[in-house]
Length: 280
Length: 332
Image (cartoon, rainbow over all chains, first blue to last red):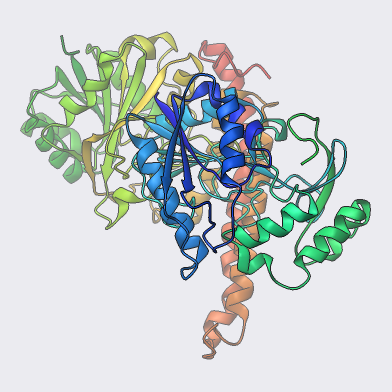
């Protein structure tokens, strides 16, 4: 199976760790970025810093630069994200069977299991692989993180979209595509809060084999930047979102213990060996 | 060289369906090596029809009666000579190129079984459940979706009894087809598939080998989706899982848990029907409200089937060991 990948180059946090986690298993990685180093919402992006990180790790010359004009402040950020992803996916689809679409803060912990799931998805006739991400909210101490969970502290998978799709797939919204999915989860019954409990699970993996998503594991100044350039900027910019993050990072045990009392935003306190994590 | 194919049709009390089924087999572009009909009906209407209208068809009479589909399949299999043995339901009418498409995947020596698509005539069914065709899920459930057309052959865990075939040597190696799936005979075909899978063989679903599946009424009385169906659905499923994976398999306890969880749907339905008003605000008929608890009898049927599956599985496993057809991996 010919595997390629694309990434949106914008955020240096965990970029090197993320790419290294699957670099050896793909033939090519398309690097998509705005040629003016501007985000979808019009804020500046540290693209040069990111490209320098990638140049250092690209020992086999697999990374292919694909600059474009994606800063469209007048448009909805998620529409611009979809546009940029589709352009990158189309390039990555050339001479490929499947394309990985991981964000640069997502780390494949167990490439053998992950790539095995891609092969089984292909065999089952699916066109997309829904693979569980563990969504990390905050690093509260070396090796200690607040992780999104069920209300009662059980592992909960997050699916921002299929992490691998068949080459030539049309994206519908950001990473999501209306294609038959092969669903991998952390339990035989769906742990995805966005789906019914009895949603079909094709395959189960341990949390240690999931993708680790260092989503909000940032320094405070990086978080404020991320809130500005993210496709979810409208959601993140609501009053209290940043303040809650700061407060929960300072008092992680309280954040975990009070989770059952909240309607949403449930976390558990977990130990994650470092690397791949570490000081953001 | 293309493998030779024997086609086995098992039937109970549906002579009209058998006639049309055999007429379609006569129209195949490539004729099979032989066609075998196994009739379990006490009355001889079907057998008379086959003798008179299709004299070239080999006819067998099973005296086991209704609810013995796997036993009839085994009777048919035992007399066939083809490299590949295909089974189709008596209400499954093959396309002219069905046989050619069905045998094509056997070019891969790892393939031990090939199933085809069932066209049920339901709009949109060809795109329903793509990526979820013939799977055994980690929670113990099976997916069907055998009407889906993924556009290419895909690997599956089990096949649809109405349109499936097996490499003779592989089926011989596991001791043929085992019975013990009474009632509506649910799961008997999945049992064959899972046993073959346990040997490491590859099972393939090819959407190009099409039968038109008209789903004739059951000869055993009651509608297809009555409570009897639900009872045997759960009972036979437990039996199938235990026979193939053993008592200690996570599939068995997960399936029990899944079944229990699914019963909450009936409770919610009963509560909804008991409410004085519908979601749109219009009043609900008194008759509907009074009869609301009736839906819970479906839950009773399912739970009874789940419980009945336990002793039935114990008996079936003892019999499998005695007959030398136990699934090797089901040691727990």
